[in-house]
Length: 65
Image 1: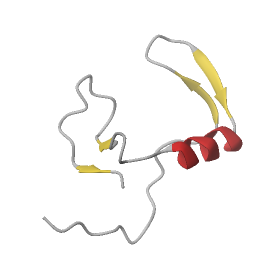
Image 2 (image 1 turned 60 degrees about the vertical axis):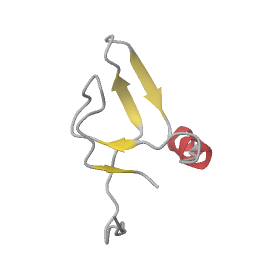
Image 3 (image 1 turned 135 degrees about the vertical axis):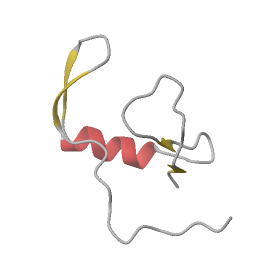
Image 4 (image 1 turned 180 degrees about the vertical axis):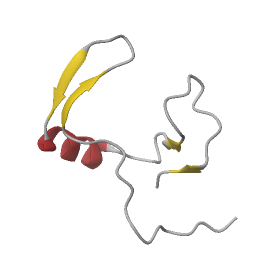
């Protein structure tokens, strides 16, 4: 199947205070997010595009390249 790039970016995470699934609050900066983007390598593990935070990451509606 041929993939099509999106015409507009999708915001998936923003800087600021976030609460994880265990209730722990963490602060993320723009630099933290930039470092995550720079480190992402789909050759190692592709990130699924899912709605919410399902435990199994399914169903995947697409994959981040």
